[in-house]
Amino acid sequence: MTERSAQLELPGGAEAGSTRGGPDAPPLEVSFVLPCLDEARTLEGCIRAARRCIEDNGLRGEILVADNGSRDGSPEIARRCGARVVEVPERGYGNALTVGFAAARGRFLIMGDADGSYDFSECMPFVERLRRGDDLVMGSRFEGRILPGAMPWKHRWIGNPVLSRIGRLLFRSPVSDFHCGLRALTKRAFEQMELRTTGMEFASELVVKATVLGLRISEVPVTLHPDGRDRPPHLRSWRDGWRHLRFLLCLSPRWTLFIPGIVAATAGGLLMALVLAGPQRFGSVTLDLHTLVAGALLVLVGYQAVTTAIAARIFALEEEIGPPAPRLQRAFRVFTLERGLLAGALLLTAGAALIGRLIFFWASSGFGPLELERTLRPMLLGSTLVALGIQTLLMSFVYSMLGIKRRREHASR
Image (cartoon, rainbow, N blue to C red):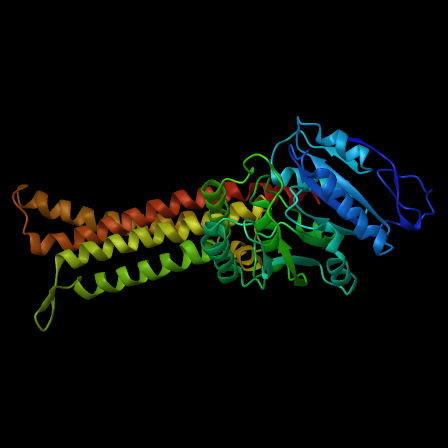
């Protein structure tokens, strides 16, 4: 990351793009952070709008452009307009904002796209909310206005509402517009969230982490204008929509894997128990060997979903891209690698014993034909137990490997 400064005198003695003012100068209150990739057509208007907000409201502030490798002269335009430019060579919306936030000197951070779709001169309500103690203030286009031509119909009526509803459902977030590009947060909240994603998922990660960390979140109605670009937007509807959805689902394995897995495994276990001793008739309906096979399948698939959910949760915890997991950490004080291996070995042994008994019976009968009704039930049960035992052994090793980083960090403290 490299940084170059332009100088612009702002109210109260602050300078956008300069650190002059001496060590005793009061700190900046607001930093406008604009991620930029080839926005020469609209960048000057955005900077001037942000400057009006600072001047009209007597703020001590700065305007910072996080340039993500523009080749159309955007950095030069930003400096000429008095903004401070931070060059971010690693491509990605999240990269640009993370570096921009880290370089910002203001106590409050206001982020927004540099394509002219938002009017930065109207950002004072965000500052007022932050002054009252909110940690994250989201713009809401659905509570405000969407001008004609500002948002494609598939974004307005499908993409954004669906993704926002999923985010609220999975994480109990109060945000009505998960992907509004205009939002504000405190520098302290940014540091507390430790954001990790580098692409468009950054927008979702910011909201999710603020929610699960219990930060104070509020919304401000905003107006979305048609952007001023003369080229297609960087956003790719289906690709980036899927990336947001995938990110939300992966961050909530409890609802996408764990609970469905528990339901499937429980249903399968009940079906197996029902017909294990023999066929069951309910009026004209008979449940028999086919039901036993279906039950075994549900048990195995459900158990796989549960163990995968736990692995996904551990990975998110270790990489610090997911919410804290105090219950999971407590559980791993009880379910150690050794205990997991013991449980897997017991399941494997029980299954092998059932199968071994059948093999002995088969050998004693001269390896002739086996009676299906008598032998298939214990064979299915034994096979299911062997599969569960092997899965437990393998996942115990995976969990232990995923936890090595955290144990190493704790040991170094």
